[in-house]
Each structure stands twice: as C-alpha cells, then as structure tokens.
Image (cartoon, rainbow over all chains, first blue to last red; front, side, top):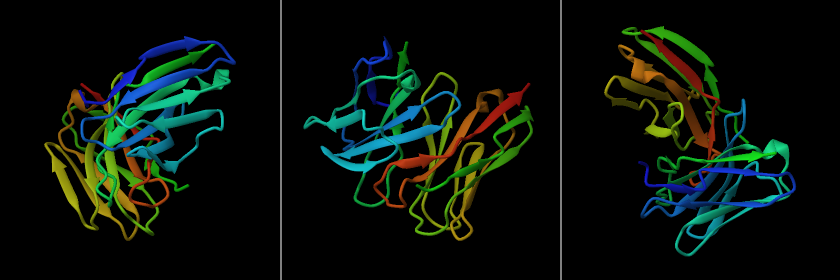
Length: 115
Length: 114
C-alpha cells in the first residue's frame, strides 16, 4: 500500500460527459502528479501541483483540468469526453524539498472507459 | 519535452540467469534519474533515485549504475526469479528541472521463464 488513494477505481461513461477523479496523497507529501496510461502508450505526464499551486504542465488537453485543495487532495476533471480518453489515470505524490523530485508513490489508478 | 529511451522493449530470461537493460536520457542539465518496477495489475513502485555521476545503488539482487556525462543508466538483475517479471521504467524530470513531473520511458518488459 503506497498510501496514495484514488477514487473511483473504475468508471464507465459516455462520450460528451464529464467526470472527476479524486486523489489523496500520502500523509506529508505536498506534491501531486497526474499521469495517463493509454493502450500501447507509456505513462504520460499530465500535470503537477505543489502545495495547492500548479507546478508543471505536461501533455494535458484543454478539456482536462486539475486542482489541489488546501487539504492537499487533488481532483482531475475530464470534460467533453471522447473515446480516446479511455485510459488508466494514475495519481502519484512525492516529497519535494526544493531540490530534486523525490520518488513518486503511485495510487492504484482510476480506469476510465468512455463508450 | 525530453526523451527518455529504454532498451530493449522486452526481454525473456531464464530463471537463474542475470540480465541488464538500458535507459538513455539527455546528458545536459541532469538532476536525477529514477527507476521503477511495474508489475501487472499493480502500480509502479520506485526502485532507485540516482543523482550522482558514477552512482551505484543496490536493492537485493537488483542494482543500477549511472553515467550522467554520457546520459545512460543500467539496471542489473542477478539470478532472475519469476517474481522479477515486470516492466521496468526509468524516468527523468520533465523539463530538466528538479521539481517537475517525471517523463517516463516506455519501459523494458521482463519475463522470467522457469
């Protein structure tokens, strides 16, 4: 158990809909990262938050947005869903001491299926 | 966006044999190189975070070396066991900065054959 909690574990929805994925980081970790893993693709970095603020942005679509709340949990919002958004979405957390990124602790992932 | 390349893509190894595989990354503005193991139906788990040129880290039968000047890292597994079957990922800070998200390679899929 990594200490990172993601909900829901599975989600099935239709094209055009909007969903929210939730992540609670490990106790004490201030950084939260979102990754997408699609079929035949590696882990694609979407976005990072540190202590409530956006820290780095990767290949995140404009239809997607995220935020980190004062209690440090994070939500990834996916809207106007398309078939190609079907993927496994991972949240990870780490300690960042102002220097190098510490090891990432991954949640179990949220599997999104868009029909 | 930085490229992280791993080779080979997949590897079949007999139980008991030793093996190694490679991660290549940009050699400029180096901050850290991470190795993760990703077992099927589980989440990636960190093996090593390496920061110094010439660094060698070890965890049981698994070890890793780092050459930041030429931009590569090797992961070694000694005396492979069936439980070593997994995808091994290396990762590098996304934009070269220390606090950014990690860019992952596509991994080396290791299958240990009994």
